[in-house]
Image 1 (cartoon, rainbow, N blue to C red):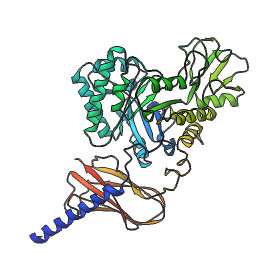
Image 2: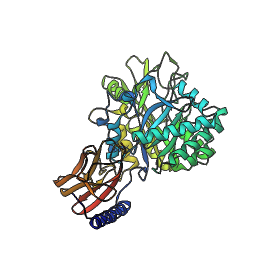
Image 3: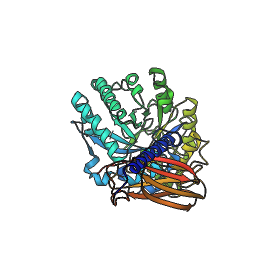
Image 4: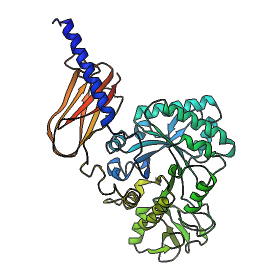
Length: 475
């Protein structure tokens, strides 16, 4: 079949004009979930080993701004591996990322953790500009290939000899993430004191937030039992308020970049009471297990000095200090009074009671009261219609396109190539309010002779209002 050359040129010009129009519209109408939400930010750590007992479908995404997926382990050459020898297929969790993005929740990859191998390897890779650059490139590529929205460095802990090298590593990582043009975040966690290995005043300008681990003030490493995360000190082991005060008074970190740690767990001490000598080990007890102990007859107490609760058994030989909704309220009110930017939570699976996650719900409700009732999440009707970024992106050959409808609407969803030619019509009809998803496959070709690698544009029309997203197909 022959094609009139002048007609073909006009068709292409018309297509380019249409594409320019919809991309220009996209710059104004599309929200970006790559930036953290305004107000206090709630970052919840999610440990990948908990996927079986607490799968992605159980997470209350509407009560989070960001999920820190933990952990990958750095190697001394700047590459990374999984924790405890897990395969990458077992570690990577695309369902988590897709669902989080559908609720405007970021997912960052956390590197390190309380791991002696990670600690040693961080120190080694930081010493050389070559390995620092390799690590920066590795993390950038890992985020782009797997859909992560940033990197969280949990080095426990750099020593004084690592101080300058740590800053150099963070600078290399910041530059690498910035080069993507995708607003990928970068954060670190620190202990509840300004350690000698942290040049905080040089680090914080490169970071989106500094997470202070204001928990584990008592444990198997202390002589006495005591609160895990006391708001105010009951003994010499420290407290949330003393830690935050040190950061505010001895560093230049803006309060808005300081994130306070919340513990969704406690420890079971063999001890005759709070602040008493302990013996044996002190195993970690998730919040849900503490609630089970209380239901089984353990006695609830409130320590008004530290503003935290604890449980004692009938024989008065065990004590479980932990946090509940009351102590979480005290901490969140303190955070607001100091103007801090948000919280980091270890760890969001630990307050899952099946029908609710009371600590997370309390945290969100206090820090974001204006959104606590009507947040556009999986379990609520969206307050506005929108088209989300497809996932995965880049894709080959298929990707999922998700969108929200605030009411019953007349909807079309089409895909166009860079010339403005229609490649596929995915939806054309009326749909109800809520969250919707559809799969687009570039493998099957199109009316115009097959899908080539490159940029495509998804265009959602909702009652005549247009939303667009760019997509990248790589064969």
